[in-house]
Image (cartoon, rainbow, N blue to C red; front, side):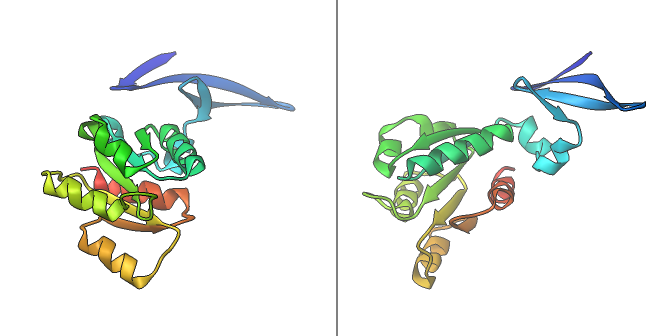
Length: 172
């Protein structure tokens, strides 16, 4: 058994012998966080080795608890840490924003909007890349988000590869 340690991601490579009727074949099996996964799945997942080399922390702000949970699970599945917040106010009260690699912000939140949050963070010297997401897409909102300096604008619902591609752009 070979052991590799990529900072926070521990991958244990073992060889699994699969028997199917009269033939035997060997193929590598990766165990990530205790889950057996075929080696080729790393490419299918879109796991970026640059993101693995640096600790990636995505701050996610959305007032939809189910979206927060699903995005956190998706990111964890791809080896990306996340910190979730149900409101812009909760993020501003927290000191966790300092740990961010990038921000994933819903535009239409209950109190302070995601765009207003970006303006406040930028005014305080924040240079974190921002990805905006919204279920209520219109040209005015899209233009306002682009003017606020986002690196990506996602319309909900979005495919997982769209989010992962946006995060890959944000991570140097």
